[in-house]
Image 1 (cartoon, rainbow, N blue to C red):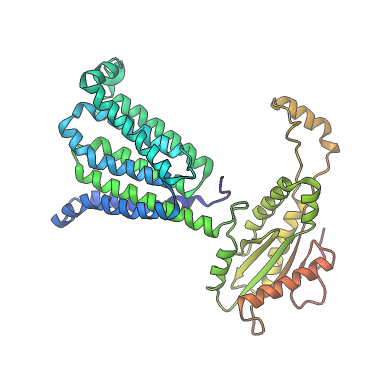
Image 2 (cartoon, rainbow, N blue to C red):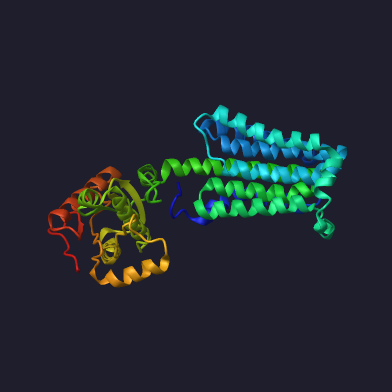
Length: 413
């Protein structure tokens, strides 16, 4: 399932750190002799660490990709010496195996899944060995463009496979937007650059494979963080993330509890799918709250907004702004079974009946409380914001109410 609204910068930033470090080391031309001796062992260390993390999280897909990287690092220098004629087909098969493993969904049985994945990778290696030099020349020698690409240093079959894999992984990253896809993409970029040069530069190959394995490890840890701290439906940080944040708050901050009005009626009338759409819409609006506020999914139809360093009086205008934005947002329900396949037909139908369709109206009630001498603990501030929320609902809903206020602030709409 896709994680909505995950920021792209941290998604690629953290796994890219080891890649940037590896590039920096390659640009540093005067290596100490000890570093040259250590680098070949680093991929094996990172593979062991990565395997432990994969087994902990039951991630056979990432473990298979790590095995792809480690196997290529271990075999490539020997293959370049003993069978240079197999470098092109081997690189093409490695790229294809990497793509298959990236697309291959996790299975319930990790052991069976790994056996099948390893068997698939071994099958390609065995096929190359059985076909032999003469057979491979017969298969790939008919490609007329091979000579034109010789200056790139990559046989045409390998180049095509690398381009297909790169495009596939890029589409996966754009489609799902998860840390796992970011690590897979960066790991492939490292190896796609290093493997064609690996025969002449084995130290660079070891360095880039270590960076690829580290990127996969970081992305897996990042994926676990998102699973634990980010709400899958809305993409907002969850309640656990809120609790962590509240432990690091300063002396001055404001909390707001927001609740979707009549949410049970949405579910009962339109179904849970529409209820999920309502929650996503509200979350997307709360995410844009001005004034430095941060939105969290508290649970059910309830959300929490945190304003560090701001009093309730300073936060109220920003909350009123987001309340109005939610009230003004127009949601229109679409009947999926009756939706025509042709876009032009759908446009004509919408144009004919658009005036008679009433948009779904969604509003929220918000309760606000600030940390002060009477409300020192975060739990006390949350409880006070909850009381203000119930006061806003009792006052007619669709309004913002501060804790301790005599009456709810009436909505302007």
